[in-house]
Structures are given as C-alpha cells and as structure tokens.
Image (cartoon, rainbow, N blue to C red; front, side, top):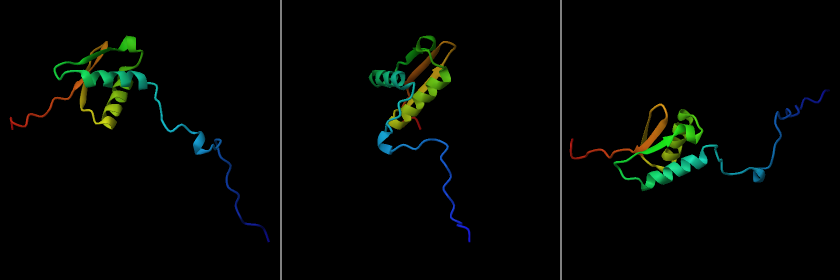
Length: 100
C-alpha cells in the first residue's frame, strides 16, 4: 500500500521569521510627503504650497497619490491641483454651514 500523504509544496520565495521583517514601510516618497504635510499644517487657509516637480524629481501622479494616501491616513483634509511644472497642495475649504 502506497503512502498517500502529500508533501507540502516548496516555497517559491524564502521564508523568514517575522522578527526579521521591518514593521514600518518607508516608501520612496516618504521624506517629501512628510515635509509637505508638515508645511501644510503651518499654512493658512488662504494659501497653497507650490511644489516644483522638476526639483522634486518625482512624477506628478506618483507624488499626488502619495500625498493623498498620507493625508487620508492622518485625517488631513486637503486638495491638490497642478500645472505643467508645479503641484499645488492646500487645505480643503470648510463647508459653509450657514449658506444652506
């Protein structure tokens, strides 16, 4: 009679203990996003931050996505807009409760 127990399939990638895995993911946009959100906290509601995309060295869509993800996780209401060379980041205006 043959032994019908199946051997587990081999892993495609090596397994490591969880203690060897870093708990924090530090994305490539972490520093610039952190700086932008830090500046935004000190910014008044009538101004916007202007980020020069050529100087930042990142793609507009990638930076915009990273900013929105970080702001959402920190519950910071913001909006962005852009032109050919710059990304603008500003506070989302508060809803006018009296006007309705």
